[in-house]
Length: 193
Image (tube, rainbow, N blue to C red; front, side, top):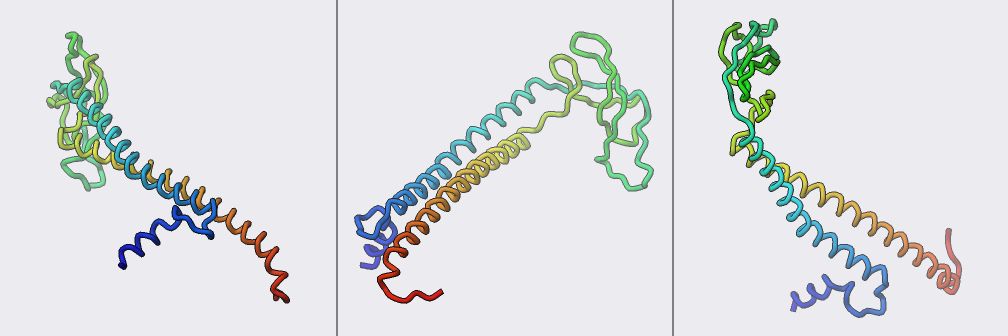
């Protein structure tokens, strides 16, 4: 018995009821639409964004390749004395492009290296220096994060729009109650305030 009553209470805005207002039905449909858009739209947008990110990162992995370059100047360690093996600094390097020409450009290299040291740099198909592409695991993680952010962005905007609509419906209900009270209140006698 308890479940039947709870089910009836849950969907009271759609039931026939003399106290039900149009604003109640509209609010019920707004809440339903918000939930459907958040669940279905969020999942769809998240999957599309994740797939687009994964495709872009896969393209980067296939387009970019590593080449050996020679460091043209020393890259000193930071003077502060605090440094780690992952510290990097901009330095000039020389390498051979895919067309056979010698190129010189600046790129990030590990600090503490001497001129003449061979380093690995990444270039695209045109021979332009680029950053190292993400590994498959990093690409998967980045695609998942981007998909999650896209889903959350959609969910947030849909919930905000739903809240604005529900607030407007509440304002209309309150205005209706004020009008009805102005009609009924004087019949009750003396009003305070």
